Length: 122
Image (tube, rainbow, N blue to C red; front, side, top):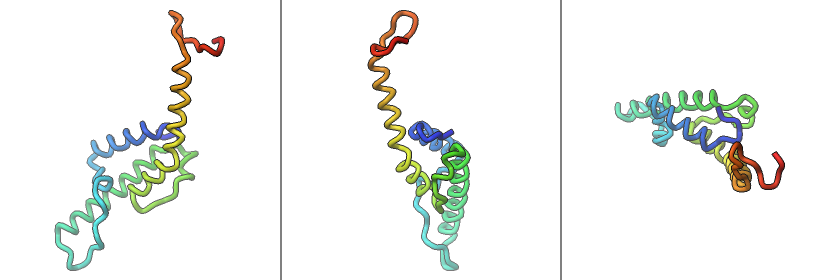
């Protein structure tokens, strides 16, 4: 579940699950041109596959985002647009948390039973 601070892990998990479910077609391919009566069967098939993948991928991503963050992500027509917005909006928070944790871990030492911070009396 995406909570606003775990973008990297969430992104990796979403890509994995969509790939396993064979729904990553819209992430891997650009949307086809507009389908007309003159479009070939291959073009129609590609468009149908892309639309199905796009809709189901959007639904999957929306299901894996915590409710308090869903309202901050605008509705989009494309799963790639949705993912880009989430990345742009929350990737820096993910990096900030990683930096904070790395700083905390670098000042810790192990005393034989548990880790202690150099600067705090735990």
